[in-house]
Length: 382
Image (cartoon, rainbow, N blue to C red):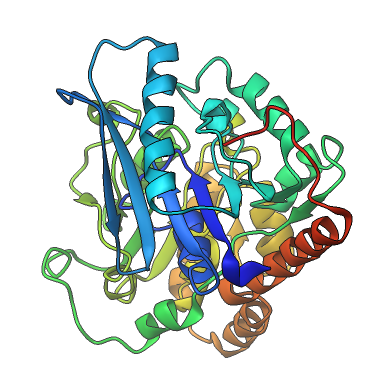
């Protein structure tokens, strides 16, 4: 069933933004499907049109461009018209509809999917500036979906009673990519002049980061240097703490990350404890560990369950505790036992095995549908 199908994915994330769960999964699923990745529209065009480009991951990235001044109904109708023509041109006959954003369920270019997958990677309704209708749209998507994957155990707990077919697939790891950092001897130019010890973070800088904690640590330890990689999103850059030992180096490509982390002493996850972090399962956790770096995190539940309780990641709830945990990591000289435990844990975890397990469930549903006749989905077009 798989070989003759496409995946049409609707996402709230730009493909060329931070390389994370959708990119890891869909680039691997491109071994089995033609993957069409539909981004949210960009406004400001003189007329409506679609950009489409097959990238190096063999994923077709489709971006609607729409004029300004459209109301919500016009935004949906113009996207539907564009996508209908495009999918007809691409001869999409059998496909899986794969959702990252529930807000896309109103897109209806009159094609019936063979299967509807909701890969729930975050509790988007808890994020800053989330659309007011997000909760209602997710409720509708959960009613329509054939299968639901969650990006962590906390999300699984939150969604398992809302759908009969929910599976937890926490953040995985491309070990080979990050393990390169353990043996790298190259110093990147914009990090080269920063003194040691270095405590680093990479990822999106938004309402999920505890900026007060970052400031407190930098003030407590002026000889430590904090390196922050990533784009600033949804928050005012003027709110970022500015001290001589905090270095904002901007967004880096996925390929560049091992070069930066290779020269850090400690990796950190200074997440705020709020509604937006309640259900997160940070992909960076196993990535930091694969690079061979000690990790200190605030008490994120999925981090505690998967790594903290196993002694792989230090968990600290206050600035004083975070400072002490970083100092202990800096002072840690004998890492052999810890690294063996890390490698054992990571050996059980990979994006390849995650995709393999997802395909097992997908194929089972497709075979079931083929044998019983694909069930009709009234008003469930994508």
